Image (tube, rainbow, N blue to C red; front, side, top):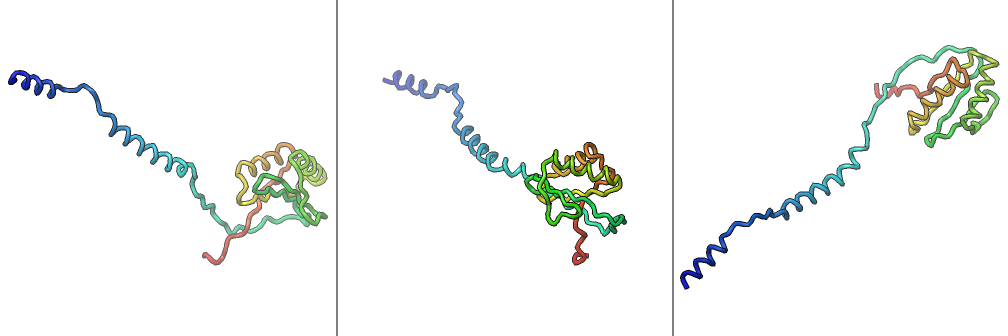
Length: 151
């Protein structure tokens, strides 16, 4: 009997060559949850505070400028002298109408009034479209004057 009990003890003490992966799976699941929660927060972007200036307006002739309005959804509207409210246009109509105005008066100023929620890319594309396709020599951006209360 002593021999059998000694052999049983020897068998019980035999080393196992297996890795217990249960703790690693728990850690992996916790990390997965953390990354799933934090990943959408990383795509938010950076807040940019654009400078305000007290620049004086450009002196211009008595002609009223043509104003291209870019809405937050990217739609366009055109305002010019003799029009009581903005006229909705697409890009092709915009180029045709503004080119007609510029052909009549090459020094006619054209301003792009982009909504604060409009994509910068859209506003930039409209400026480029006006300069290349409609041959506008004086294209600029409209903005609001700086607040005096904060100074």
